[in-house]
Amino acid sequence: MKIALYGQYYKDNTEDIIEKVLRVFDRYAPQVLIEANFYTVLNEKGLLPKPFDTFSEHEELQEGIDLFISIGGDGTMLRAATLVRDKNIPIVGINAGRLGFLATVQQENIEALLPQIFTGGYKISSRSLLSLDYQGMSPEDSALDFALNEVTVSRKDTTSMITIDVKLNGDHLNSYWADGLIISTPTGSTGYSLSCGGPVLMPDVTSLVITPIAPHNLNARPLVIPDDTDIELRVSSREEQHLVSLDSRIISVNVETVLRLKKAGFTIKLVEFPQEKFLDTLRKKLLWGEDKRN
Image (cartoon, rainbow, N blue to C red; front, side):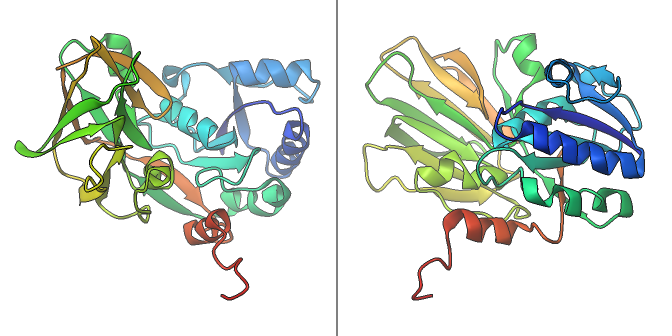
């Protein structure tokens, strides 16, 4: 088996996580590649017992890689998705931060769960993405024109509201007066959209969520739409530009630019272990059942 390893270094627990991962690797002897920056940090900390091959970019992920391991939080998982892209390499998230919805393997469970990737004791959860296109998009932005969690439009350099005109399949939906607007995938429904009052979607539903950010009109509510909908956004503002974010990547775009969003033509494959299912994570994260009256 060939495994790519990527992560962020956290002084509190990365050493322990790497030691546990390497112990599992010693038992099953996979071929391992480590992302170059992460490799440098681990080497400087003396955490690697031997040299490993490295990679830096999406293009350097060789054919035949069976698994991609991300060590960090959900943000690290989102960056891992930009490396994997459309290569259909399953991603395992080892959580080095707070409880996350994407990085679900907890530090204390590494040696119990990680061996299951070698024995087939897991299933694949395919996650849909959003793609973005607009006239004048740079080649650099076009190369990363997708989002696993959400695409967000928001104001820039102003405290005034912006107006976001929305069309669905060519039909006018609404003109939102708000600080911004979130278009969320099912995966992203537990993120920014949830904090703005959006609903939680199960990962395998074929829907998207439109969630306004601090709307001027209180009757502007989140809306669930089919994920095969073609979405057009056009922002009006007192400023010359507004912001568009694809997960954690931010672009400045001229106002009145027509943004075209649709479901991406590929999915991100996440590894799900029987012991760390989405509903288990949801209960833990939202503290369901903590109320003693339940």
